[in-house]
Length: 64
Image (cartoon, rainbow, N blue to C red; front, top):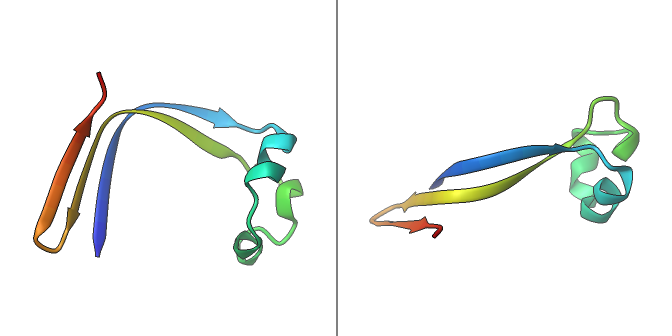
């Protein structure tokens, strides 16, 4: 398994054009009404620090 930990600032995106641009067919299993699903949104994260762990590997990225 891969674990990712991300710290930063998030913004909620509800713009329909952006939702349409980012939409992938596999999301239909959770959002059958597509981008018209009530309350659907994206989170845009500007990361300051990202850490990951995968088996014996681990790493970290820190934004300057």
